[in-house]
Each structure stands twice: as C-alpha cells, then as structure tokens.
Image 1: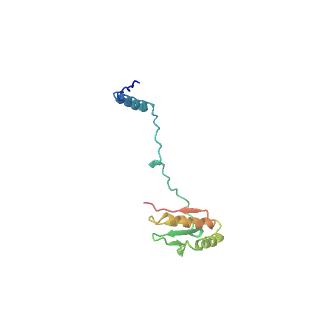
Image 2: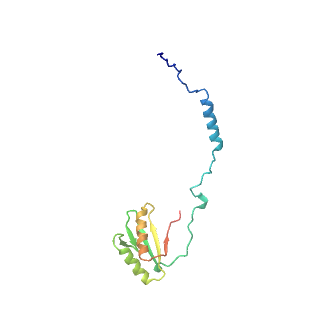
Image 3: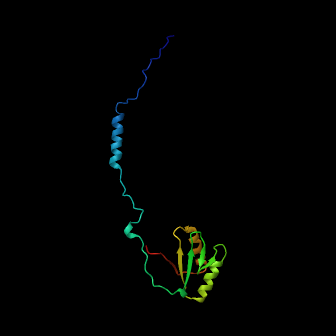
Length: 139
C-alpha cells in the first residue's frame, strides 16, 4: 500500500494593510451621522429670579410673629415654643380662634437650617394656618 503524504499548508495570515483605512472610514461615518442635541439650560437666568413684593402692613394685633434663631430656638410672639410637643399647634389654634384673618409673619436667621423651618411649617399646616408671610430685611 502506498502512503499518502499530507501536504503542508502555509499558515493563514489576516491582511492588516487596510485596517487604518477602515478605521478612518468608520470614524468619518460616525462623525457625519451623529446628531448633536442642543443642551438644555437647567438654571434660571438672573433676570428671572423671583422678587419680593411689598405687601400691605397689617397691624401687630392681627399677626403672629414666629422667630427662629440661629440656635434653632422658636419664639412665637416672644414666647418660646418647641417643635416636639404640640405647643406651636396650640398657640396657633388659640390665636386663630381670637383673630379670624390671622396672618403669620415668619422670620429666621440666615444661618438657620431649612429642616427646622420645614418642621415649623408642618406644625402650622396641622394648625390649619394658611396665611403665612416670610419677612426679609432690605440690604
């Protein structure tokens, strides 16, 4: 019997001469087909900031003034109150039963944390006090 010799094949090579051309064409294709979206503005321009309005002054007898100090002390008409108990709600209910159109003037220090202001506002909401004015000082 005759032996058949297997023919030795040359190793197969991947042609790499045109890879630079292909990558350049792909880059050019993606640059041409990309759609640029206009960036949205997520900030308010300075000329559109809300401004404070001058409101008619109400007599001191028709208002309840809430002061919140930097140390988070709450004073309603110069009497200390606490957020933990219902003293804010009780004071507002008593005051609103005396004065039907009660206006609450809210003053706080510029360094007061917002959490304490939010807690007081929630207590005012529980006391059904809806007419709240935030006061500020002129610079």
